Length: 150
Ligand SMILES: [Zn+2]
Image 1 (cartoon, helix red, strand yellow):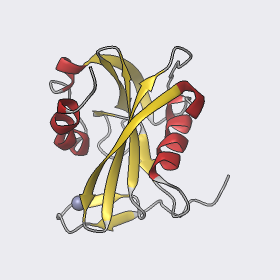
Image 2: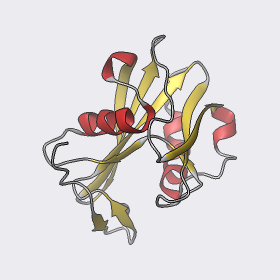
Image 3: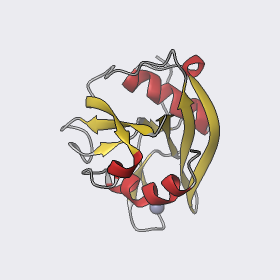
Image 4: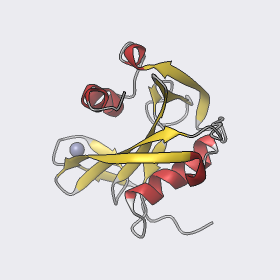
C-alpha cells in the first residue's frame, strides 16, 4: 500500500477539527431519485451516523483520485462504474471538502467493502435530511441537493 500522507487532523479557521491534512473528498452517487448513503461503523469518528463514502486526500492526489480511492476501499466501486457530473467544493481557508457528484452506471454495485461501513442504502433524496447524518454532511446536504440534476 502506498504511503498515506493525508491522514491527520487540521485545526480549521472555522473552529472545527477536520480529518485530512491535504483536504478531503467524497462521492455523492446518484441513481434515479436516490443517493447512496453509508451507515458509518460505530468505531469511526461520528460512528453510527450516515454519510457518503470518502476520506482524506493524499498530497499527490486530486480530490477525484482521493474520492475514488476511498470509495473503492469502502464501497468497492471503481471509476468505470460511475459517470462524474461535477465536483462541488466546500472551502474553509486552506482546507476543503470536495464532493464528487456522479451517476452510478448500470454496472455499479456498491457493497460494504471494509469495516468502516455497517451498511449501505440507496435513499430517496427527500428522505436524506431526516436521517441521523454525519454533521459535516448534514451541513452540506441542502446546498448539494438543491443543485443535483433531476
Ligand atoms: Zn473548517
